Amino acid sequence: MSRFGALRSRLDTLRADATGESRRRRLAWVAVAAVLVLAPLAITVGRAPEFKASVQLFPRAVGPYAAVFDIAYYRSLLEDPALVEPMRLSVRSGVAEYEDVTFSRGRPGQLVVTVAAPVPADAQRFVNVLAPQIAGATRQELARVTARDVAELRARLRSRLAPESRRALRRRLSQVERLGPLPPGRVLYGSPAALPRMERWADRLIDDLPGAFPPRPSPLWAALAGLLVAVTLWATWLVLVPPDRPRRR
Image 1 (tube, rainbow, N blue to C red):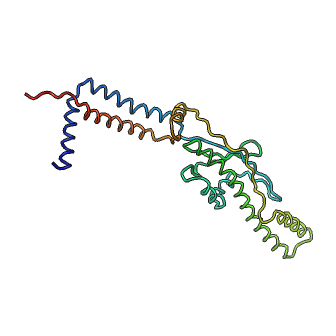
Image 2 (image 1 turned 180 degrees about the horizontal axis):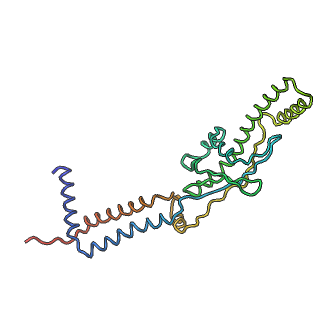
């Protein structure tokens, strides 16, 4: 008999066994299937889709340059190679995405950078690495600004100017040059973020299990996985403990 024929014979046997099951046995398996589908579904729905970790940022004036509180400025830094490359080397891929990073206003004189991730430890790690890199990126950005301003100020000083305007430009040039080729960063960052708390019972339940904390799956996939387990157990039970078949006369 070919492999296909053997498989077909086995399926026919399973079909016959399934048809021959008693009503009580079928109801028992319906109950098992309901538990295996509804339990993962309830746990999944009860879990948080993401966890957030935050670090405070403190914009400051550097020399003649005022502190920057414009959130768009800090958002633009997330595309700066001076930030992206160190982040790539420090944090493994998939921990979080830059789309999951938000900036908001905190107390007067403060901003807050927040990272959302499916795993609490990933949100914590990403934001704690990101905050220093933001400070470093502002330093690189200000270095480009000062280099440009020095060139422009020197060019203007070579033109004909009124004495008062010339003195003001020289004073400005001196302030900018005093910062050097690599000026201080335009922002300081606060204490590292703590591990986000698990507020939902399902997350605490999953966290108590052995192994790493997994991201929340899709509720649909959780239910389908439970259904697959139920069908597999049912088919295995049919093979190991087939129902009594009626005897042929």
